[in-house]
Length: 436
Image (cartoon, rainbow, N blue to C red):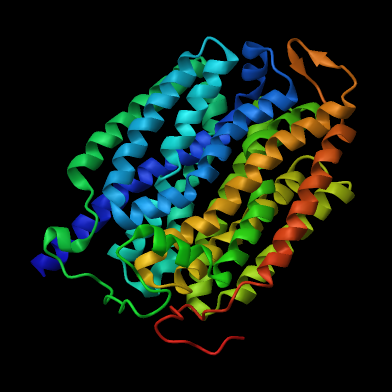
C-alpha cells in the first residue's frame, strides 16, 4: 500500500509539472489572436506580416516534431521538459521586451522552439507511467487541461489587458516558465524504474515491428516509412491546421471587423469555443476507449466538424446564443483529432511511440504554419484600405476568402480520417486484431 501511494504520488507529480508546462504551450498558441490589435499597432504590420509573426511558432514547432520524438525516445522526457521551459521562458521574455517586429519574431521563434518538445514528452510520459488501456483517456485529459491555457488566452487575457500592458503579461509568463524548468529538474523522471518502481506495461520484444535498433536514425526511418502512421498526419494537417489558425489568430479580428464586437465580447465566443474544444478532447478520448473503437469515432467527429464550417460560411447565424453554440460545436467536433494520437501509438512498437506521435503531430503544425499567413495574404489581396487607427479592418468578403481555404483544408482532413487504421484500442504490433 505504501509503495502504491509512493508510485501514485510520483507519477502525478511528474504529470502535474508537465501539464502546467502544457497549459503555457496553449497560451502561447492562442494569445496572438487576443493581442492582435496591439501587435499590429506597435509593429505597424499588415495582415500578412501579422500572420507570419504568429506562424513562426507553428513553423518551428512543425520542424521540431520529429526531433522531439527522437529526443523523448532517447534522452527522455526529463531533458525535454527542462530544456523546453528554459528556451520558451527566454523567448517569452524577449517577445515582451521586443522593440521591433524582427525582435518579436526572434522571441516568437524561441517560444515555438521551447514549447515544441512538450506535447510529445507528455504523450511519451503517459505511455510509460500509465497503463496502455487508459492511453486514450489520458490523451484526452492532457488536451483538456492543456486547453485551459487556451481559455486563459481568451477571456482572462482580454481582462488582464485592461490592467496590464501586453508586454508585461508575456514577461510574467516567461518567468513562470523558468520556474517550471527548476521544478522539473527536481521532480521529473523518465521512467518508473528510475525511482525503483515496476513499469505499468510489460516491455514489448524488439522483433514486434518495426524493430527497435541501437541507432535512433534507423528507428526514425522505420517509423516514417510505415504507411499506417501517415493518415493521422493528414487528419491533423487539414482539420487542426484550419482550427488552430481560426482559434489562435483570425477569429477575434473576424468578430471585431465583421460583427462589430468589442474585444471583451469576442472573447466570450472564443471562451465557448476553447472550453468546448477542451471538453471534446476529454470526451472523444474517453468514449473511444469506452467502446473499444477508434476509426468510427474519429470519422463522426470529423464529419461534425466539417458541418460546422458549412454552417459558419453558408448560413445566416445570429450573434448571441446561436453564434456561441456554433463556435462551441466547431471546437468540440474538432477535438476528435485527439484519437489520432492513440492510433499512432497503437500501430507501432511501444518503444517508438514518441516518434510515431511526433510524425502525426507534425501535420497539425505544418497545416497551421501554412494557413495563418495564407489567410492573411488572401485577406490583404481584396482589402479596401480601411483602417481603424493603425489597425487594418477587413470586410466580410475578405474573411470569406480565407474561410473557403480553411474549408478546403477541412475536407482534406476528413478524407484522411477514412484512411486511419482501426486498432480496437490495442497495440496491433503485439496482438493483431481484425481490422474493420
